[in-house]
Image 1 (cartoon, one colour):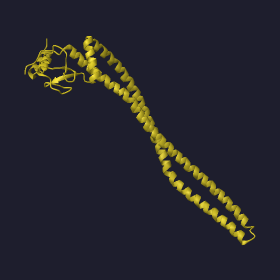
Image 2 (image 1 turned 90 degrees about the vertical axis):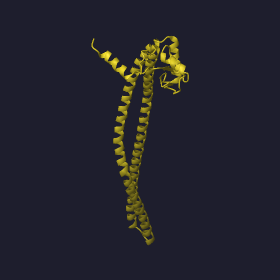
Image 3 (image 1 turned 90 degrees about the horizontal axis):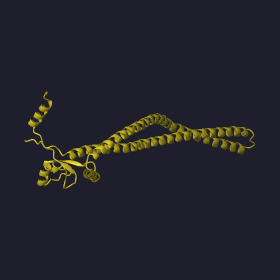
Image 4 (image 1 turned 120 degrees about the horizontal axis):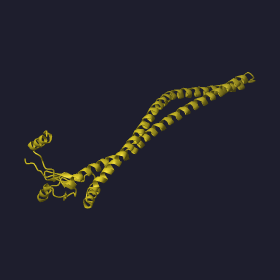
Length: 259
């Protein structure tokens, strides 16, 4: 295989460097845009967990309030029973005695209902208390993690913005190396084709659109006398001449040989 001494057109070299800068700039901008969304997502999850904890706390407070009320109801019924027993001693007839007795039985039934409900509430409160304690620990840990991620995101964003400024400056300098017409061509292709502006011709095809190049076009491209654009996709296309293994070894030896 013969090697080619033909160098790549300088505008193509500049375009390839600019493309690399544009791709890095695009990746950084995407990262900068993604970070706030990531923070919003983890904060949303944190909010859901906070609301769940608040609901469990509210349920626990409601449980405790109901138990307290039932305990008060029991106390009232016990006071009624005590009063009714005192009144029973003054009963004049059997009917009066049985009436007092019936009222006492009613109060005792109400007390048993309250006690049963208190037992149910106590059973319900145990898992609630465990859930609240576990959720409080988990939420505190999660808040620390979220704050850490937010700090990391802020630091990462600041670093990305700084790198973007450097890359944008490099891009501006690179674009200035073009003649106005070439600069306009590059920008037009970038706006239309996205991140792939320059494509290598591989085996007679544009590597971007994979469409075969016309033989005459391919021959002209191989000469590298001008900047050419793919007739199918409109991207800047270039030919990178192959290098034989022997020539590559010889070139390396020449570069590394002592003066």
